[in-house]
Image (cartoon, rainbow, N blue to C red; front, side, top):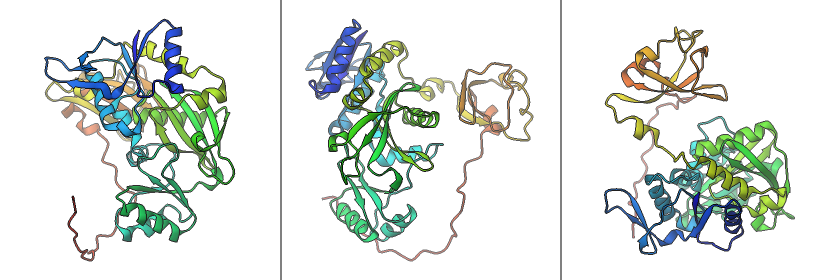
Length: 401
C-alpha cells in the first residue's frame, strides 16, 4: 500500500507512530504537509498538485487535520475522495465532528446520549436556555475549541450569563450544556476503528480542575468498556461518518453521555494507558479497506430518472408484517433492500427468508413512486407551541464591517 499521512506536525507522536507502523508492515508511506497541496480542476479529472508538482499515486490517505486549517484541510481531503483515494476520515466526517454545535445537532436525532444542550444568540434568550439545560452549574463551550481550551464551568446563573454575554460580545459562538456532576473531572475516550472499539481509557483531572484533558495535566488509565458504552461509541463515530475516531463520553448516572467525537484522535495518551499498538491497528484497518473508497450512495444511485434511495418503515397494519422479504413483493415493485434495521441491530443485505416485523426500517434503492406509500410520516414535535402573537422586536441591521 502506498500511504500518505496528511500532517503539518511531522515530529508529533501520532504522526511518527503511524509512519513507524506503516514501515514495519512494508508499506510505502510519506508525510505530506496539508497546506502545500494545490487543488487542480483544470483537466478532465480531479487532481492535486503537491509543492508545485504532479502528485504521486497514493492508495490511501490518513488525514491529521488541525483545527486551524479545517477549511483548507477538508478541501484537500474532499479532492482525494473525488480521485477515489481511500480515506477513513472523510471531509464530511471532519466537518460534522469539528463543529460542536453541528455534531450535537446530528447526534440528537439518534439513540445516543448527549448532555442537554442549548444554543442562543439574543441576550434575552440566555437565561431561559440555562434553565432548559437544568440550571447552573452549566458548562459553556466555544464551538471550535480543542484540548479543553474554551470550556468554562459557570457555578451560578449570574456568572453563566455574564460569561456568555462577554464571549458573544467578541463574536464568539458558544454552547450551553448541562453539567454532569457525577462525572466531574473524569471522562472516557473510546478509540473507534470501523465497527469496533479497539481501546479505551479513562482521563482523570488533577486537583479542582474539571477538565480531564491530558493537555491540561490529567492522567490516564486503561479501562474495559461494557457493551453499552462500546455500542454508543461506535454508533456516534458512524453517525459522524468517521471510521477512525476518538469518542469522548461522560459516565452519567443514566449511562454514557457523549461530549465530543474527534476526527484526529491523538495516540500518545491511549497507547501509554493501554500499552496497545493503536497505530498498527489503524494502518492494518486502512490496508484492509483500501479497495473500498467512500461512495456517495445518493449521487451514484440516483442517476436513473425516477430512482433513488429511501428508508421505508414497516408499519403495523401493512400486509408486509409477518411476511418474508421474498413474499413481500418489494422486488416485483422494483425495490431492492440494502439493509434492515431492527431496534439497535442493523442487518446488511438481508436474505429473502428474513421475516418482517412491525417497526423494521428498510434502507432501499428503487423506483421512488413505488416507495412513496411506505415512507414513514415526517416526525412531529412531541409538544407543539401555542400559536400566539409575539411582541414586535426591534430590528437591528447587521454590521459587516
